Amino acid sequence: MGAPIMHLACLLIFSLCCSNFALAQRTPTISYISQEQIKDIGGTVELVCSVLYASDYPVLWMKVDRYRQSDPLPISTGSSLIIRDSRFAIRTDQQSSTYTLQIKDIQETDAGYYQCQVIISINNKISAEVELQVRRPPVISDNSTRSIVVSEGQPVRLECYANGWPIPRISWRRENNAILPTGGSIYKGNVMRIAQIRKEDRGTYYCVAENGVEKGVRRNIAVEVEFAPVITVPRPRLGQALQYDMDLECHVEAYPPPAIVWVKDDIQLSNNQHYSISHFATADEFTDTTIRVITVEKRQYGQYVCKAANKLGTAEKQVELFETSTPDIRHRFLVSKNGCPSLLSIPLIGFRALVFVTVNFVFSQLTQPG
Image 1: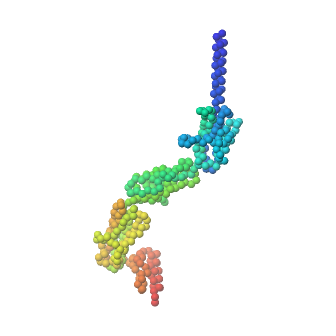
Image 2 (image 1 turned 90 degrees about the horizontal axis):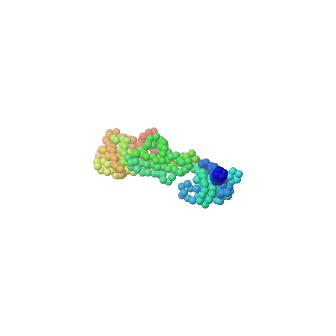
Image 3 (image 1 turned 45 degrees about the horizontal axis):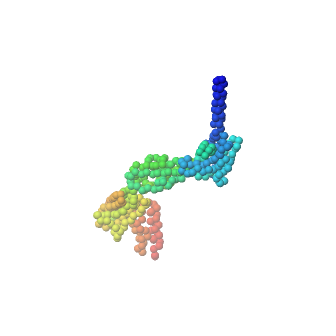
């Protein structure tokens, strides 16, 4: 009697296990979800979700924020769209239990994570997600360096960041492909560091962002380097005869632009009947300064000092004017009979200047009365 009862009990237990196993097998599952999608703006994408044993359960497409910074956005349930956007469509295949979400005319804002959900109960769901990445051309971020002013010898940090997809690559160049302070003509990376900047490093730098989508973008970054004046004298010694004019010159390189003076015998010179001083800025950092000694007198021979000063320092160079018996006629007046100068102090250097002087002289002769 005991053996049949034990046999029946075993059959019941086996039947119960088989029943529970069958029930467990029929729990809804997601059998397929599309892989990551990368599309261009304006393109079309189809996101596919296939489910098993879910005919009695709602199947939803949601757009979700992986970082939970915003609420999920329901897009569709079953074969019906929830959002009103003509770019979206839902297509279902009942035979294969496949739910296909189509997005046309893709926009940048469509990028993100799309989740296929099967709602089992109020506190129970299963889900799988696919990421849609939208290719976007690079855009250089506002937190990138725009311009910088530093003193010579200081460390410099130039930063460049860009948004876009794929993630843009950043490279640095200089105007006219000049050599970078880091060496070479190209530097790759978001941050370019210069340990000790020199005045030769000043100029325009280019931050270039590229990711293969459309053309790369570029930002011009002005790097100004403040430095103490540096003076060069093209002709440190000049000879001139009495009663002739002579120009003494200095080339000054400095930033910020310096104050420039001419000094003789510890006395600062100024414009008067004996001297004419002029400054000509050829660029922000370069100034040519000239003092013209008018109708040289004996006492005007000697050492002239060109001085330049800005907040970073002072420099000076000497130019000597000495007496000669033969005049230097590279600077002279051509005077017509009526006493009016037809050409004032034109340097007679080179063929073009000589022709120019000759034409002016002939013209002045032709226009003289009688």
